[in-house]
Image (spheres, rainbow over the protein chains, first blue to last red):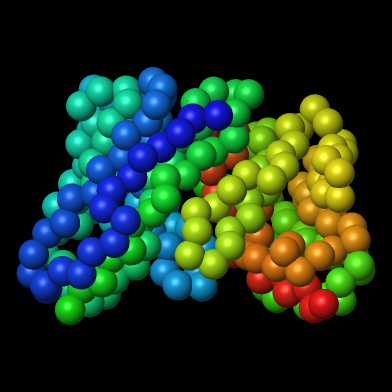
Length: 114
Length: 112
């Protein structure tokens, strides 16, 4: 299965600022998923990132707030822009390399906005 | 789109008992059903999965069953141990999109 390196693992940020989260995969994957997980809650899909095209955002999430880059098949970034305390959450990236594999998750970024 | 319902939200059992978590899905095109275990502060980890051409799959103390007609699938854990305590998520996805839909999670507590 794929191995994902995600950073930073945690950060405390001032409201109004932005944070960029990075995920590096050890193999080429077509799709990369970005999730938000509130404490004690399920995984909410933010967007799906494909290389060479604009990310596809789920209802309730917009590109201006969560811009995503996917410069190649092994790397992606998610930026949380103009942060407010409501953005405090855990953010995870995930991939599913092929039909024979399950979804693999990064270790997560615990974001606290003060 | 796909909708996945998961029950119960909390499950408390005694060590050695069995635990069953159930999920239903809405999209008949879904063909891949993974289960994830998430310990506190850690990432979700795949524990078992099943595809739509199989009715049951076992891996030691863990088994998953799938009823395509009824659109539900279940996770069975036998001889539970305290280290099984975690949040378990089911998910469903179709082969075309690969986009998974997760259930709300079940917090399993195994009392020694």
